[in-house]
Length: 281
Image 1 (cartoon, one colour):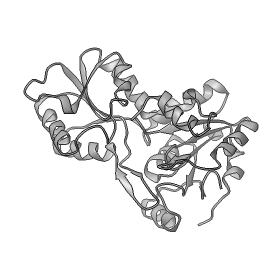
Image 2 (cartoon, one colour):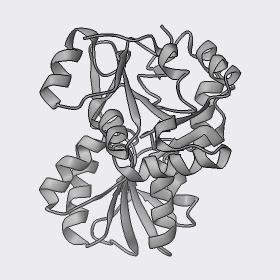
Image 3 (tube, one colour):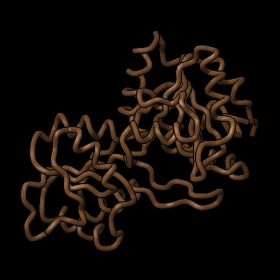
Image 4 (cartoon, one colour):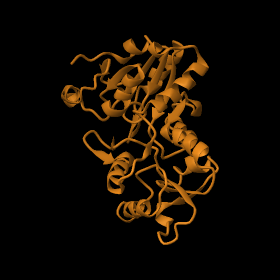
């Protein structure tokens, strides 16, 4: 397996789509060297956006996570989150009523900004369903995993309503060797148990890349050949970029460890155009 130096690759493109967690930051904060890397891209007039399946916070809060670590280059207008796509769906398809959500109060921003009322699953009374119009699965925190996931299943059995999954990630890394279960995996389980089909937003679906491409062409004239997707996960970042028709770069600073990379690539058949140790090495 041949590793490339990231900047040697990046300078060949006009636009770069970065995944966030595992690429630019992790559980400890922003990786050392990210600021210098972004400054080099700015110097060479290369545009960049952060494409994240994180629907736990509003874009302003996601940008603030970087700003707190001195990365002021990543502003709100550079954030493309799966929550933004869920917001668009809710705004166009659900015009009144209350949306039940699994997640934190911060994650409910995407529902409230669509002009809808919200209620956390923990506050739902299954004997008085009321005017609930949809269920949004937003984040893996903010509710009781036993009682509230069971309550969600029973709500789905009692009421026929769309279920929006605003984060398709199944796991996310919490250390070099450990991961947490993400809301995407909870959605997979509930979908099987409820025998229903959920509406998913985020990578690897093409909607996420379409939305990001629309933002990119507002800044400058570019085609698909001018864009590089950089991610740490084969089944979201890399396959999504491959299917959309843009070049892809797998970095080994997040979900996939260097010692397992070749085996995982061979097992999945998902092949990135480039493999780098990180975006800052």
